[in-house]
Every structure is written in C-alpha cells, then in structure tokens.
Image (cartoon, rainbow, N blue to C red; front, side, top):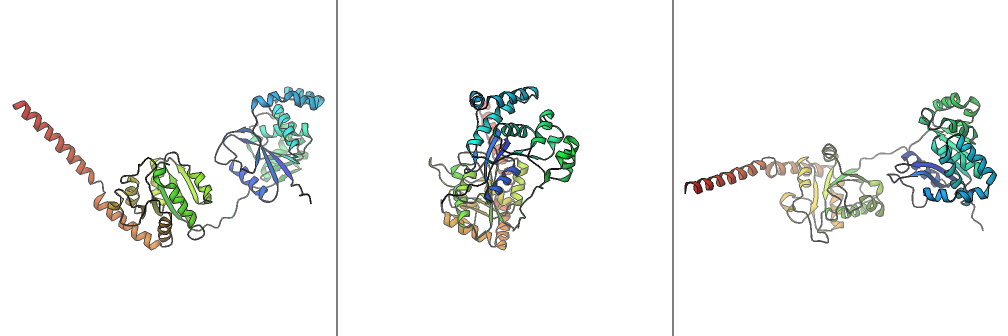
Length: 393
C-alpha cells in the first residue's frame, strides 16, 4: 500500500546568522504536525538556530547558479526571456537567477507550495520561483519591509501576485492596504505569533566555569545530569573560553540539550551574575590524556566566596579547600548522587553555602595578599642588605 504523500512547503528564507528563532520554531511545529518542509536560503551563514538534520536545506553556490542558467533557459526559453527582461527593468536580476534555480529544485522535490518569510529579497526570489514553476506562493509580511523595502518596484509587483498573504497583526494589514490597495490587503490573513505556555518549575542551576577543555570535566557533569533526568530538575550553566570540548554537542548526545545553557566566554559582570544566581557550583575535573589536571581551581574559591555549595574531584589540592562534596575522578555515578543530594535538599545547600563562606573568610580571603606583600617586602629588604654588605666590604 502506497504511503500518502505529505503536503510539502518550501520556505524561502534568509540565514544570515542561521534561521531566526521564530522561523525555526514555526518550521519545527509544522513538521511535528505532519508537514514536509524544505528550506531554500537566499543566504547561508551558520548561527544558533540551524535546520535539523532531517530538514532538507538547499545550499547553492553562486557559480553553480550561474552555470545552470543555460539549462533553465532551454527548459522554458520564452518564459525565461520574458522574466529576464522584467528582472532587468525592475533591477532584480539576482532574485531572478536564484528564482530560476530554486524553482527547478523545488519542482524536482515535489514542492506543493512556496512560502517566503518577509516581503523583501525572499519574496522577490519566491515570486520568480512561482513564475518559473507555477507553484502557488505565499508571503509573511511582519513590518520592516513595509517601511524600508530594498526594492519597492518588486514589492508592488510581487505582493499582488501572492496566492496567500500572512501578517502578524491587524495594524500591518492596514499598512499593507495603504501600500498595495485594499483589494490586495483584503486577502491577507492575520496569524499572530505564538509561544508555548511554559510551566516553569524551579530547576536547580548548576554552574561550571572554565575553558572548554577535557580536564575541566564537562563530559562527566553532563553524563551525570543525563542520568538524573526525570528525577531531579537540574539546569547546567557552562561559562568559559572556547576549547576542544563542544558542550552543546555533548548535551545533544546525552539528550539534555534543553537542560544546558552554554554561555561561552563572558565578561566579569556576567560571571558575577552567574555566580550569584546559581544554586550549586560543580567542577568534576579530571587528568587529561596528556597527564594534565587542575591544581587548586580558583573558580572553586570564587564560587565559595559567593556562599555556594561546591562539588569537586578528590584530586590535587581540592581536599584542602572543599570539605564536601568530593567525588572520585571520572565517577559519574558519584557525581549524580552528589547532584541528587544537593538538588533535592535546599537546606543542605544553604548549610554547605554558609560553610563555604566560613572557609573562604578563614583561609582564602584577600588577607592572603598581605602575606604576598610581606614576602616581597622581606625579599627586597634582604636584597638591599646584601647589596649594602657588598658595598661596605
């Protein structure tokens, strides 16, 4: 028995810094509902929101688009020349070239409908796609393109030719009417932006600070959090300069990407905010494959100075600083148990945090700078005495 073909929509978008967040969420929702969506970016630059692996995304090369134009001409010479003259007249040649190329790809993939996100470059490419392929076209017009459009001639030509028009508020429908006429604006449908209604709990926020290097133990922490999923609500905050460890990819590998926020390298002000706002600080550092590990991590002292409970590895100098909780090196189960204890017991966290401050005030406060000062002064005075003795002799 043949499988029924899913409705297939081609999204013409810009990916100047990945997909914009709203478009990503919209496509995600449509695919979840059973639509097939393919993506045709007029520009492709990686960013925070990238197409999922199972979404088709057409990545063209400029040279390829140019070299394929004779083939597009041979398929529909009359249509090609007519649209080419239009493109030259409306100064939209680049959109014409992309439209011819995209249209062929869309037809090959069995696209049923074209949707251009925004009434600017993407609409103009979508317009030429429709002219070449005959596939119906819609456009989402959300605001700026009705104020500062890059090609007003193409806007006035393409919008009336759309089979469907989407705006996100009544105001933009009225503005559209003023621009292209009430009869065109009348067919515009107001589909407002949306967001999930979040049921926010109060996750235990676990901070790890340090360069994204193997020895910091990010992998150990994320594995432990993965084992606690559904048991303790934990959110990991990772701050530090880029390195060989891809924390974002690890979180996806362990199925906890929704529980991990990768801040990367941050300013002192942001780091101060993270220390103040986290519930637990964790640094399960390890000895890397070169035999390198941490000495006595300063980040542990910093976290304790904020009154935070800390979890660290029972290695090098940490037992001199951390009374509890210490775990064995690479002990994922031990770390999961430690996170479970702190995560499920706010009173224990408060008690450990108070003890952290006591330890820092006693042995790790700024008063230690006086010892360094004394060392330097004493060393300098000794050197002066030696020079004086040498001179006298």
